[in-house]
Length: 332
Image 1 (cartoon, rainbow, N blue to C red):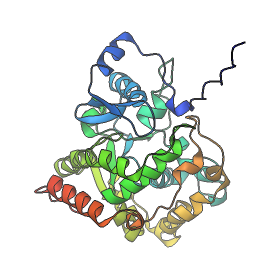
Image 2: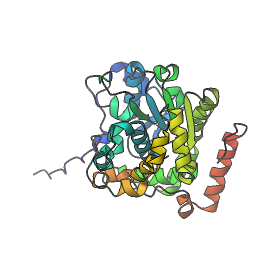
Image 3: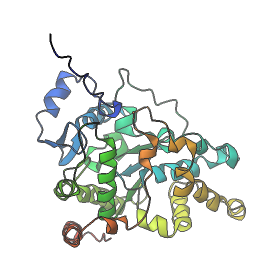
Image 4: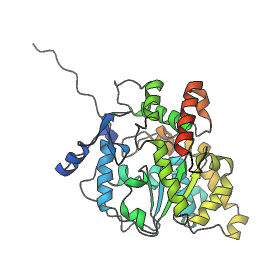
């Protein structure tokens, strides 16, 4: 009598891949590949490492996404303040539609639902191409794609790009925690040392970190009317100042009446880490991707890397950062 075999492990939806076309399969598996942080592989595409699932979305949105001049595209590397800025942008741009703070969509919907990710949410796991033409303008979309991988329509339209970067030491620590939360049951955890080696070599989703940042930094210098570059740390230190800058860049500056009625402070309170992380909609449940909503809220602090990195690790990351950004005018 045969010994019954245990059932195969359940693969979370965010790791499930749809059937590839032969054209996409030929391209993806012709690329250099490395072991990913969570599961499956990372593929080196135009100098950046993208997961197989992400590649599916990238190729689809490059072929089919048509940006329009009123679009607003939020760009970040993973764990650089994406969820916070999704909330801030939604509250800022849509503020005239939601005047009652007790009935705001951010109280009942996760920011990732209100500002979907282009390559993961919009163009992945869909048998039929999404029709985005009917979405209310301005359309708010987020992405983790490096500049070179953006759809041409984003680069050449009049849409606005908001790029958020963060100290690579905090990005690394947050990414390590996040990735271990997403690893399938039974696959164990990735050690800090293994993750650190990969991050320093640029082998992480949408990495190398430094090349990703530089691509948009240079674009913000070349086209400041189209690309807004801000550091996570700047926003944490002077949120009201930078929210006003962002509103002006997006063409929706605060009116004197709004200033008098405290609209700026109201948006910042609504979108604060303390408020968002304590809402029921963000503490429990899962997104359509299969990810737990709570996974996107850990600390939201500046300098948490001090609790994890050794002196040698700090020196190495700082050295890479200095070398990569040398001559660019960008510093942390």
